Amino acid sequence: MRILFTIPHFFNSDGDGKHASLSKDPRPRITGLVFALTALRELYSQSQCMIDIAQCQTIPVNQEQNYQVDIVICTTQEYHLLAQIPLPSWFCKHYSTQVEPMLLGFQCHQVLREYLGQYDYYCYLEDDLILRDPWLFTKLNWFNRHAGNSCLLQPNRYEVSPHSKAIKAYIDGDLLPHITANFQNIQDQPQFIGKVMEQAVSFKRPLNPHSGCFFLNAEQMEYWAKQPYFLDRDCGFIGPLESAATLGIMKTFKVYKPTASHANFLEIQHFGSGFINLIGRQVKYGREQETGNG
Image (cartoon, rainbow, N blue to C red; front, top):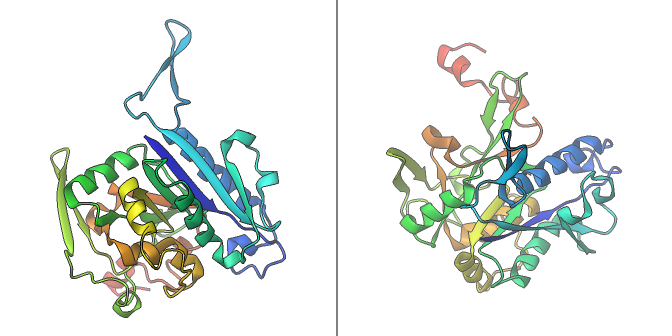
């Protein structure tokens, strides 16, 4: 299986600090990007082995998951940290552009279209997202075999922090219905229930389809690229960053996510703790709400 990952990457230390990509200190951004890139090679490359202690040599592993991975990082002008990333040069390809920084994600869409017909999966990841699931593409393939390619399964994003009221928090809960009502009808096939390893797993059309990423099989990518709105750079969903990750797929497919009771069936980590640290401050912790405390 051939997999193409595209990642929009931007950093400007002269920014206002509102986003991590605009902070004065580049070190957290470098760390997050290194984690994200290393995870892709760790999980989906063929550079894996087991140490046979008795024979004092390595043996191949995970041959059934025969993945070949290419990673393309899209940047604009000189606003990036690739020269400071302590990884081998072959780890990824650098796709340099001059586009407006906020529209960089749409440049990734163009790269995906340029490689039509060459990959089995076409993927988009914001540069602070870390995959942990070696069975991701097996799960996606299973879902589409049962639900069809008109449906797209998205992971639940989460953050972790040992210092928060909850160690792990999923950060893309429901939005108000009107925010996505113009782009999706969640009453159209609102739920899907499947069985995995004798365990029922439920999925729903979410009021918040955003995950900061998407993973399209070849047929889905080809279909999306043929739509008249492909690459129209519509920023109508929250803003340009959210729209690049989510609006196009929301217009094109019936988007699903695992329900809260099975949230970790498909998930992706958001580097940092900006959202989880809101719990107990701007966000009331659920147990406090139930007991009337806080």
